[in-house]
Image 1 (tube, rainbow over the protein chains, first blue to last red):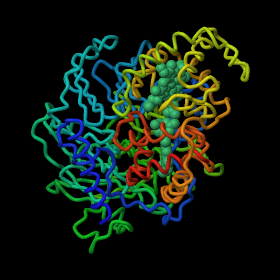
Image 2 (tube, protein in one colour):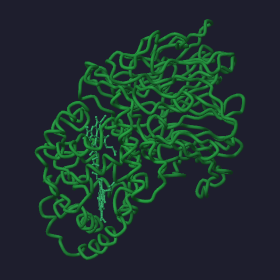
Image 3 (cartoon, each protein chain N blue to C red):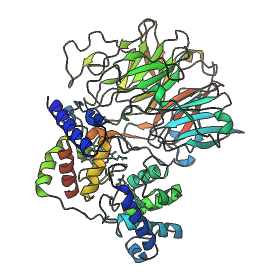
Image 4 (tube, helix red, strand yellow):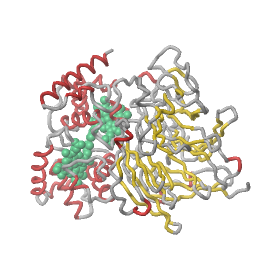
Amino acid sequence: MSAIVRTLSLGFAAAVAATAFGLSPSIAQGPPGMSRMDKTNAGASGQARTLRPHRTPPIAPKPDKIPLDKIKLPAGFKAEIYSHGHAGGRTMVRAPGGTIFMGSRAIGRVYAIVDKGGKREVKIIAKGLTHPNGIEFRNGSLYVFSIHRVYRYDIIEKNLDKPGKPVELTKAYNLPPEIHHNWKYVAFGPDGKMYVQVGANCNICEINNGIRGHIRRYNADGTGMEIVARGIRNTVGFDWHPETKELWFTDNGRDWAGNEGPEDELNRVAKNNEGAFYGFPYCHANGIADQNVKIPNACAGVTMPAALLGPHAAALGIKFYTGAMFPAAYRNVAFIARHGSWNRENKYGYDVVVARPQADGSAKIEPFLQGLLDNDGNKFYGRPSYVMQMPDGALLVSDETNGATYRISYSGAK
Amino acid sequence: MAERSGKYRSQGIFLAAALLVASSLQALAQVPPPVSAKLRERIEVCKTCHGADGNSQMEKIPSLAGQPEYFLLNQLVLMREGVRPVKEMAEFVKDLTDEDIQSLSAYFSKLVPILTGPKPDPALVAKGKPVAEKLLCVSCHGKKLEGVEQIPRLSGQRIDYMIAAMRAYRMDKRPGADTTMSAAIASASDGDLVALAHYAASR
């Protein structure tokens, strides 16, 4: 109610200002940015008031400071540092020529990691972008999504030292320009379409599901937009099951509703269920009605998650494993990087887990890469962000705070 | 940077910077000087805008004294890379190495913060207090708003700068920032922002 009054009076002020300076009066819609309808009530959450997001070092630590020795894996698996020196590096795609491209958030860079006779060289191929987290590769071209800006770098692998001016596809994709929860995740699906995340521009608020809080897909050139799944707070990772070709995605639960949740979700878009509603902002996790945005029957018609991924865990990247290097038990299971909590008194996550799809469409979660969280000291050494399968079947895990990737290989019995 | 009347001011500032580079080397006395001559010279340039003691005497230019080292480091990297473009500064940060940035951040973080510019208005301080409590500024900026790691000191920062900064966050006009700050003040009115700045500066 008061929000409406405020919006009106702001609109009025803007209109007056616009006339005074001879600008177009269209800015009366109000400022861009965060939703004015956020209903967060941190004081009522009962959580410590000292909780705050963690820093991400803009200068990568030297290799001897990378906490490789902390990493613990199941028997037979081994971790080594694959690349380092890419501060804030997160998302990864591998091009056919062997270049690994890497997106980032605040630091605004896109990196290229090149293998030079067993040594990895890191180049910055673009910088000054706003949260260029969305990257994908197809037909010689690198796609970079920087909030609503979309760039395509053609024949890029041959021009890493001089990438040249990209083709800009921003107009065609026509994505919302708000920064919050819009550091993109993007990937081409088995149907050849570009799937794109659009988050909610708040912690907890009403959203128009036709505009945000969903996954959409396009033809590669930005035409033919369709919405694939709705009611999603912020997914920053998805992948397709290698056999069923169904889309699975992680979704980050809201903040300031207690230390224990609502838990992050692993969701599945079942065949014939495209466009399904996943609950945000009314219904979270396994059917928890929201405490701030209240409607009757909050969970009616909501597709429930395949699995819960833990309170404030910040589940980001997910990839199904199809390689031959790991034991057969890892075939067609998903590896999920959990970046780790900030809005929780006892830290949680900072690891990689395995999600095993079950016959009934759900999934079972098991630990995989551990040790970067010190439970006793309540502190962390690194933040796994994304996972990628290499041609030899090894798994690459990016660690945003250490500016490094770890190569996970298996040499035990099969 | 639409919020500021950038053009005229920045020309004047460039001139001032050029004139002052050579002159006031004695201001360095308080803190151990950084090693290289390049940095010593560069610090003098910084001070033409950010104040001889790191406390800015210029409207809407922030004080750097006593900011958390990590905050300065983070912002300087973002400025160098053009993620947070500051036109007036571009010339002076574009050639900085990571090590230069580390030294500059260590240097300015050790200077003593003193409130400069407009004085806090007691009525606005009183108005800002409950808003600051409701919006939990201390949860991120520290108990005394002294700043923590990547999060800046507000206590003793210039009021005019903080008002401009908060307006910019709310309009998505301060790129590179973690959006947690925009989220924190999304519900605040323009009047609230002014009161918050007076309150925060006075802590």
